[in-house]
Length: 140
Image (cartoon, rainbow, N blue to C red; front, side, top):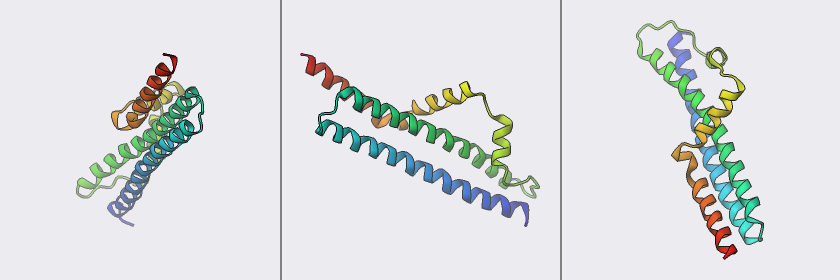
């Protein structure tokens, strides 16, 4: 099969997975909100609700890190497809990732950095702030 056809198939697969990660991130947000409402309705201690929010937030950060790896490869494939007569090999996501894989500490930092992006931090940070206000008001 021609290189550009393989790159086109790779692009489509990566794009589909990229969008699936976006849907998963939204589902994590919705699950977090549902768990918070259920926790408040059942009288669960605010500390446990906050812990659940933090877990969901970090999990979305992990998903967004995976998504950013796909985005990096998507950009590389798009660059290759824009070059006429390209002979670059397709299907090199894991080879490229393995060649540039950071250490464990850098991976954890990457998860945290992705979790702190505004599109990820919402609604987790507002929920945590509301829980903190609720706890503060309970002490008064």
